[in-house]
Amino acid sequence: MPVKNRFAELLPEITAWRRDFHENPELLYEVHRTAARVAELCRDFGCDEVVEGIGRTGVVAVIRGKTDTAGRVVGLRADMDALPIIEATGLPYASKTPGKMHACGHDGHTAMLLGAAKYLAETRNFDGTVVCIFQPAEEGGGGGKAMVEDGLMERWNIAEVYGMHNQPGLPVGQFQIRPGPLMAAADQFEIKVTGKGGHAAKPHLSIDPMVISAQIILGLQTISSRIVDPLKQIVVSVCAISGDSPAHNVIPEVITMRGTVRTFDKDVRALAEEKLTAIATGIAATYGAVATVVYDRGYPATVNAAENTVHAVEVARAIAGAAGVNDDVAPQMGAEDFSYMLEERPGAYIFVGNGDTAGVHHPAYNFDDDAIPFGASWYAGMAEARMPAA
Ligand code: NI
Image 1 (cartoon, rainbow, N blue to C red):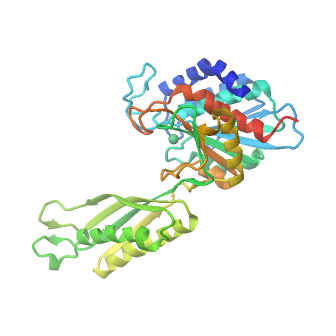
Image 2: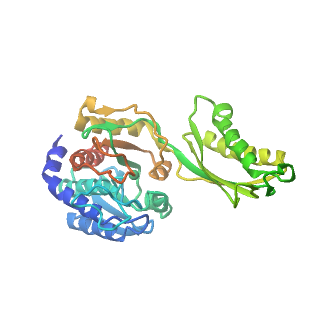
Image 3: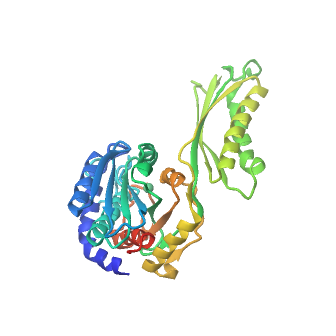
């Protein structure tokens, strides 16, 4: 594939951008330096339009092909933000800001999309328009949603969108994808059980929120085991429990629990929310306590459109060969806010191998620069394959 040869040539330059981003990590929407650098580079490449401040600190770079006979527009998306983690890689280009680290490889995603933008602006060997989307705040801030709400899809008339994530444990040069749900919807909840505090030796004079909470925790597990269709996936996890008891012999008045619900299916998600609330309030009421439930919907499930997944697989196979692409990988229970873009437009999200590194969000994680030609080739290849030159 010719794209790959060009990216082998561009590798030192793209690697330098990547390591500069790695040294200077920024969180959530505060990606000011990164976004400014992205915009500067895209202008240097000769992109036809570069717009900053979409979705607060997102950047959009537009590249028009040699021709535009059909008016097609393909969006390619990367994320730019880092994590509040103390880096422990010992790399010469490790984070210069203690407590901030590119521990999810978004520095690599941004650099790969910049590489694709440079190549596409050089060659313009397609019939239509490429919109490169650099988003802030993937790590819990909903930056993808913010860009969508800022009119991203309508303003540039984007017809389909493609995104990617590096995958530790998958050999460099390989890809994984599947049609349908690939990443889960991630919701969070807080349940506050208010009983009646008192002496631990006289429980009959109290309403013990601790015992009630224990029953609620077990009761919530029946959502997955007895309420949801066993052929559909769901995780309900209570991850934190805190009380206000000052001593070992005092029954507390209030217990607060926090946790997360992960689902792939919209109906399962709605059912889980309804039943979680019903179980918590019902069990509490049985014992004369009161449970209040706050259920916050987070990122929706990341759902690959069937047809676009086929296109994504074809491009990946052209780069990695048939054996290098798993087109039926198991879905993951993690979440991803590219999901908001896939709710607006058909498209696909693919994993690109990062080799045998520490997992994402680990202090020893590192993006493997050898993955750059593969990821950049896939981005550029998607544009060329979906809008073949006239
Ligand atoms: Ni990530």
